[in-house]
Amino acid sequence: MFKGRHFDRSVILLCARWYLAYSLSLRTLEEMMAGRGVSVDHATLHRWTLRYAPELLERFDQPKRAITGRWHIDETYVRVRG
Image (cartoon, rainbow, N blue to C red; front, top):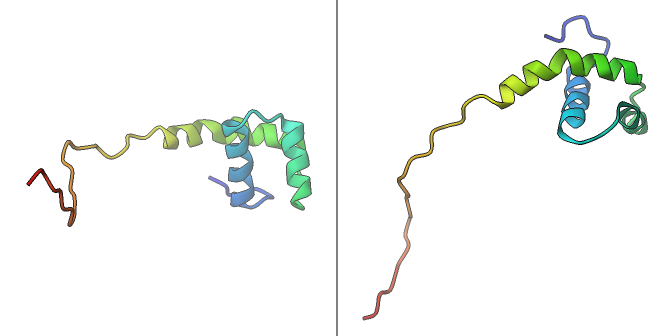
């Protein structure tokens, strides 16, 4: 998925996640990454978002583990009047 990219996979995922999760502009995100020592253009961030957002959202929306109605309590003592 990230083959042939100039930036590391972790940088691309971090930028795409921040853009999708928080209401940041691309230029603000560009400044944030510059503060962390990564020089990336806002147009590149936009291309990453367009390319990876559908795949990231699909993975986030995968069905979660089913929740059952059983509760397990370990070593709990309940004193009932008397």
